[in-house]
Length: 245
Image (cartoon, rainbow, N blue to C red; front, top):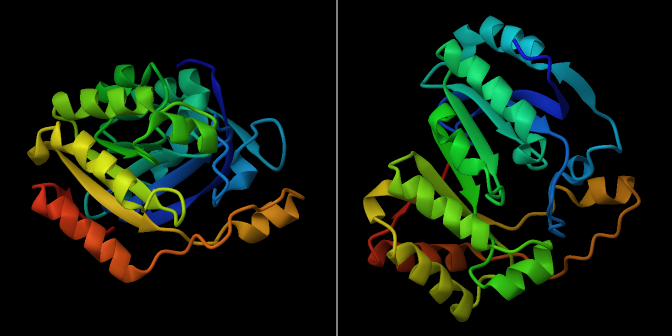
């Protein structure tokens, strides 16, 4: 087995929110975006803050010892930070786990140009689309959304299990123009091949930013439940399946 290490900053079990069933979730260090609402700012920089370095074989052994806990279709999910920042190690551990028949998933911002090479190693893809407009997406996150859209399109076209998540951030992506952009993108995809989940803004990471001595700049970003319901109805009317996990 390859001697490749992964740097993680958190791990634990979670039910249904990081893929189906009961799942062991590994948070990998490092991210190529700088979303100001991030709930895990401690995972942004790979080389700072508390973390643990583990080998592929160590994670594989740990996962295999937890198999009895993977009920209701559960398994392992890699998230972040951004899991694909540690691409070589991520690919190696996914290949190892699939060799043991483990159900695998990743939560990703979808920016990696190599993401499609992982498709056959994944049972579930959970991908963010934060804003449909390229310029706005780049200005706020620091990264273009063109590769994100390309990866979502590729995964859906290949018939992968795809959940697209939109973090609803007031003042950023809940206006009519933004949502028409989301709808335009989704309508071009085969509707039966993916699902969309709308996640309302929260401040769960605000205290973490303060502890890291980082400025938390998001203001007045809360979204009413009625707004989420209205946006879900627009998606449904367009023939797009919406879920809440």
